Length: 134
Image 1: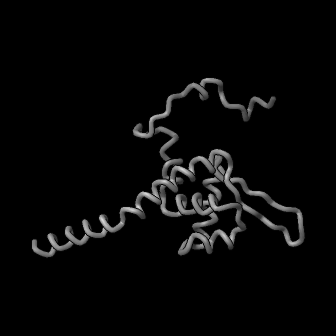
Image 2: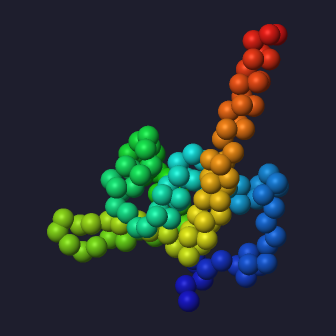
Image 3: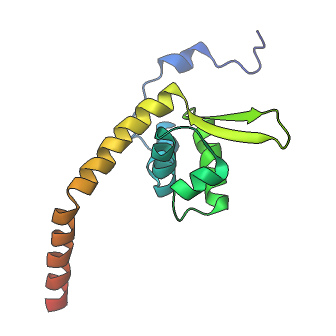
């Protein structure tokens, strides 16, 4: 085994705390919960997709932001990038096992939000009316 790329054994026993400033889980959380990360992951929960199909699924994302998001999520182990050896080359993105379980949880949050949007909109209106009175 090449020890230059192996992680020290103690890394496996680290305790992670997202509330700790230097915890490595923080950037991963940002990748997942940023607008494009969440939508990309949940968009792939519907099934594997090529870049442009995924871009259409995630309405409003720029090509640059989608490419960046896919790279981050692939590096974090949530997305798999499969290059098919055909002419022209075809690249397809899909979720890993970790990505699939994470996307399912994020989908629950999205469904909860969508189901409660009437209450959110009403709260926003009340708040805005109170601001107008001040």
